[in-house]
Length: 168
Length: 397
Image (tube, rainbow over all chains, first blue to last red; front, side, top):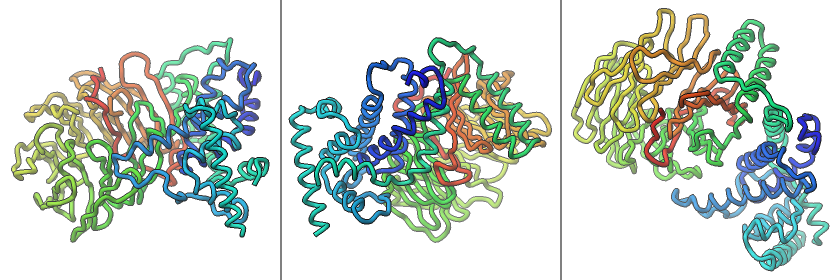
């Protein structure tokens, strides 16, 4: 981090390599739009680079970056819902057209995640992919920690049920 | 599935287009990092004109030296733009805000405000609706209105090929051509009627709605003249001779100034058809693109010399004032003012980039969006227009 702040390109690339995959994947799972996901993750990194000098090195980079990306992805998903002036169908209705071609456990999990209500899927992604704490998630979503925990519990129950049904 | 298994499974989920997305993002982020000023060090400020000169030299050099050097030029340009102007722009967050409608030779795309997505198919140009909620796409023998999510809201079919739709500023009319005839329909696609046949030497692509209360359309319906037509009565209100090689028509946001560009001249008329200003380019030079700013106070244009060298210029609408050179290069193309008029987009096909320049007085700020063709999956995407003004256009000084 210190080297990246000094302008070391290799250090920046190492940070990018470490954090890009999770950020990109999380943005995609939240928005279900691969173009938007790329842009959101990209903007998150650009924002992070712009704020690099101000970053407090006593903090961990990962949660900070993950929070930036999560907020942007959630904002995008909300804006898409609001953009109903164009008489969209439901903003989050079923699998999107750009689901990757997968089979086996990944496909089962993708299907199960797609079946989750948006609010529950966001909690799962933030907690288990971006490794944010329930308190951090609560701050991002502006809901009580108890709400985060209950959404998480219901989401995991539903995922388990859906995946076991597919397996069975 | 326990939480550990879920964590493991989530982290191994495939992401669509992962490798290409990662490569694009990496390039952009590394460029942004290189362009920033590391703490404790100061870089000298470079003015936009210096940046443009660097680019000019680099591109000229590249043209002579070939593709290997072109790659170096690309890097050099990126470095110079970065040093002069700060980090490059993210693809969907345009300097100047709003969103751009792009035609990619078969598809229409919208870019901006967090969006980058195809919205419909087109074979004959595209147009924003009045408030940017829909796109009119000419596709074969049909005219489609498409919502931003790609849903076709309505389709009207015609006997001949449909082309060059233009949605009126109030949203209540659409002008388009069917074969060699100019048509106008209501904003919902109904009630279409042929307005007038176009001469063999007409330029059907050149039709521009005048902003204002009526439905007045400026159109090059025959070579050598612009006609202003009340489309509700089909009456020709005014006719202005413009000479050959009509290139571009455009109204200021208040409908009081009309830019008419031909291959060798830029002219701005007032609403009564009186000439306000004119500029003729030197012999051996042609104008290849031109736009008037939303305030009607500035003109942007691209000139091309016989050796292929091009310049993008910006000048006030006033006689005897020279244009400010923004960019010198080759394969300069699209021009578009931001909705507020404070930024100008110049397409630079040679570098696959959109260059953005501030239009106000003082130091010109520059932003660059790279790899536009790769992001839109087409070698030469064409910028149709940039919308939408959140409020009446600000005076762009």
